[in-house]
Length: 144
Image 1 (spheres, rainbow, N blue to C red):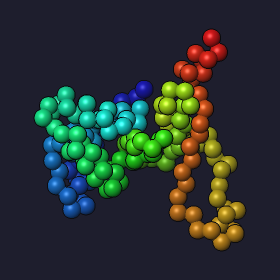
Image 2 (cartoon, rainbow, N blue to C red):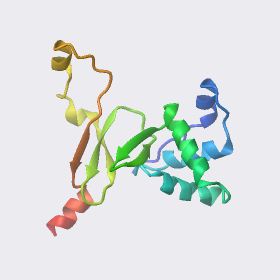
Image 3 (cartoon, helix red, strand yellow):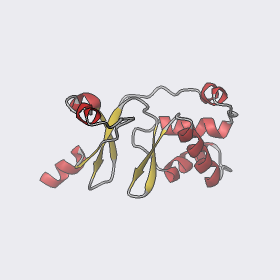
């Protein structure tokens, strides 16, 4: 896994009219460190190691604000929110066994397009695609 570049929060928040706080910066850093698409509890535990007196509510509100401002993505999986700091266009594979979420490069699905829908009068504003299957670890364990 390659190391992600940690982006400073202050610039993104100030541009959108919000204060940059230490808690928000650390929440963003902890999401950016993980390619695993963590949930709020996982982020809370990581933030708490750095700020022992932080509340779960602060982390939830921070994650909500960061997602609202487009600094991270909120993903829904089985009624639970997960968070992604990868803002580039990409898709996800959700492992049906371990429930892990994995980034899939868009080049794998180059032939997928929406031109047919647009020709039928639909206006496409975005695309969300989730693949479901086994990740390499679960697939290898199943074949053993």
